[in-house]
Image (tube, rainbow, N blue to C red; front, top):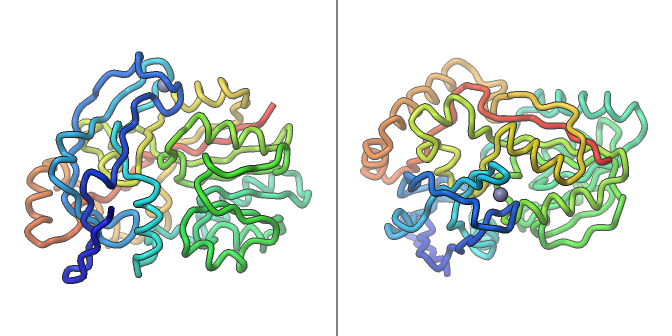
Length: 323
Ligand SMILES: [Zn+2]
């Protein structure tokens, strides 16, 4: 399924490494969906991890759709679960978008304030190697995690003091009313099935428990600067779903969550960066205004053609309560 090239150390993906999505991943219906356009993929990706090269036919076969019922934007062709697991298992590289401690501590402060000082049990979905949960443990929370990567599984004993769930949230079995808090930092865009994922979250939270999530905002200025299907966040190989304030509000209310707050925030990789790093990002983003030229230049060098996020508040931070 995934061909691993040893010479240049990249994974070459053909169409059988992808799976078709026939319906809106929230509504489970395609009758409300309209095509926004094709997606300007680069040839090489540095994401999820390792170096990935995609087959040309995927350019023609992948579209960005909008469901006019729930407002969600989504891809109709996505990298398969098996392929993602294999890349995470085989790659020698590590996940590079590690959030800085200041970012996590700010989030923990908000969570602590809402949980009123009691020892609360957190489930972090997409916990990876525990950057968030390690600090949550220190802050006095009971920690559980969920991730499908083997790297995360190998290291989970360092940051989990309750349960570890290996797999995709849509596929794992959770007990009802088990957690006080569920967190999902930059994870909603990766769900294969948004409805099932939200149902699992709702089911396993106790009544009055909180969901904290962060994801890209498809209605933000950078997302629409050069049309949404050119946005780096959409062209990223492992991102499948694109929310905004209106669609996430609809879905959470529809699932019987009460929205406590929605804030516009920076991507976690921006927070705490210096002027030099921010300038590099700006340069890459300017090039991305012409995605074809950018792709051509990066292909010449055999480098990842993914653009960086602008130093702009192009994400949403949401707190919702189970009622
Ligand atoms: Zn929908």
